[in-house]
Image (cartoon, rainbow, N blue to C red; front, side, top):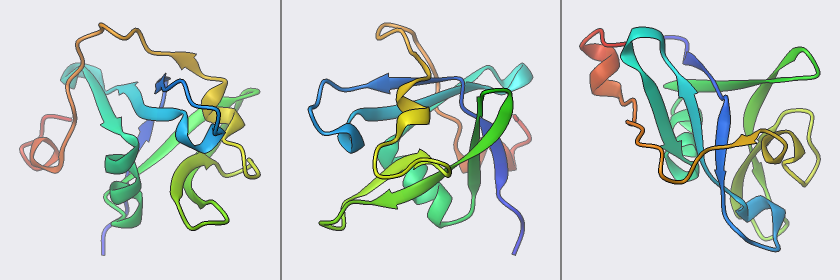
Length: 115
């Protein structure tokens, strides 16, 4: 099995929810010549669990891996590996502009050598 492709998360899209684990809607980042990527929280969870992509962000000058967490009720959500039950490191990233046109980077683009 090959290693997951690492992606750096620069921004997030947030929902207005009182539950912190439901606030992250999508992750955003840059991929050199390929432009920008956007993965919904659901896509990112699937990619992490299938080991296709891994996600990292910069926090206090160091790389922090994004992992899949679970609520007490079993609901999956994204968080930094150093976070507890609240995804603080993701919630503290810059919010993506809601009208910013961004493309989604998928397996087919990786296979075609776009990234």
